[in-house]
Image (cartoon, rainbow, N blue to C red; front, side):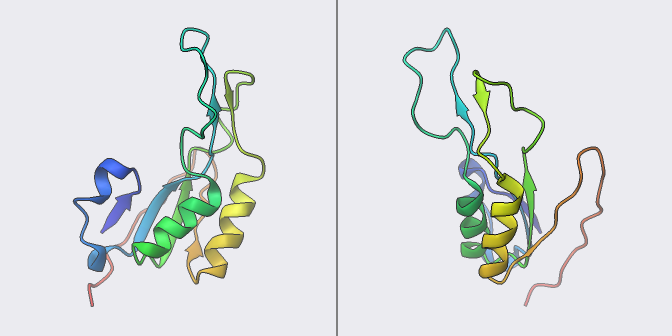
Length: 114
């Protein structure tokens, strides 16, 4: 099973079946002119949080999402070095990070449930 780690999806996931996790890692701070005052909180998970979420769900492989394409300061500012930070934390937790370059595809395989 492949899962996406948005909070509205994880309550329906069977943690035993999760082998790959798609994890938002860009941790942006978003400031929109029509929404004032801006929130001081990140609009998505930080790289380290995404790796920990994948670990909690028991993923063996984690694919970082939403990085390097949306940085539009001052409206949308991504966290620095998102991919490197995600890879480091994932490896520390025993998860294989799978970084897919922008515009490329990968074919997820179905892992047997143990």
